[in-house]
Image (cartoon, rainbow, N blue to C red; front, side, top):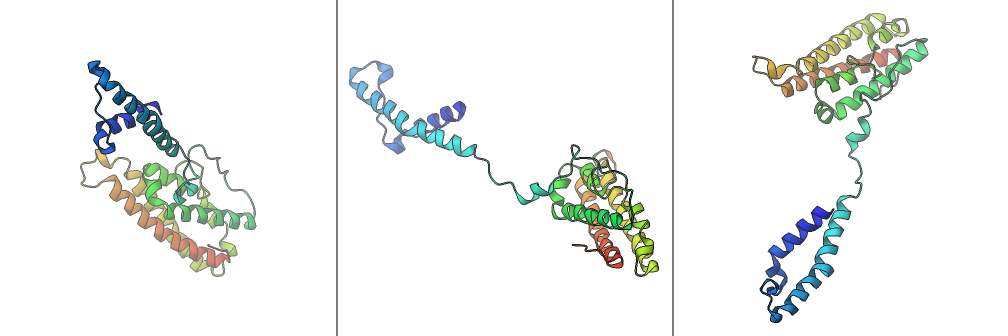
Length: 216
């Protein structure tokens, strides 16, 4: 705050002519300049410093967090998601929670991806155990008998698993792209991963439909 006030005072003094400030003769020791000195000091105390304090106070106000910040709930400090144990009803609830994590990932992908491929993989449940996507393939396999059409369900599950594998692979490769001789960037790999995640989400909707689960 002190630094900001000093900076603001300096800025104002450097443009003193804009405020019709009298020229100071203080440094010359001339008595004729004393009134000018007092005028400048009064201006600094009454106008500049309060203005600087106002700026500093305003800059310290806590602004509303952007929408994506509320969704970035998964990080290394998040509680672990336990390996799934439960009946079909519990499995469906876990699947619904996984859908929400994937939707959060897609909606806020650019911000999440800024932290690198491992942050994307954290949401996919392939890096750490913080996402409801952790172990989701086994959860879905346990629900085969709950599907309306087990053949269509199995096909959708295979597609889902393939896109999950591809998305995880692209996100993982992005961690090493800078050291690769191939002409590909971490950003391009993360965009490839995003495309796979979007396709993966479509098959999650198909699986949810087969299970009679709300995919919203």
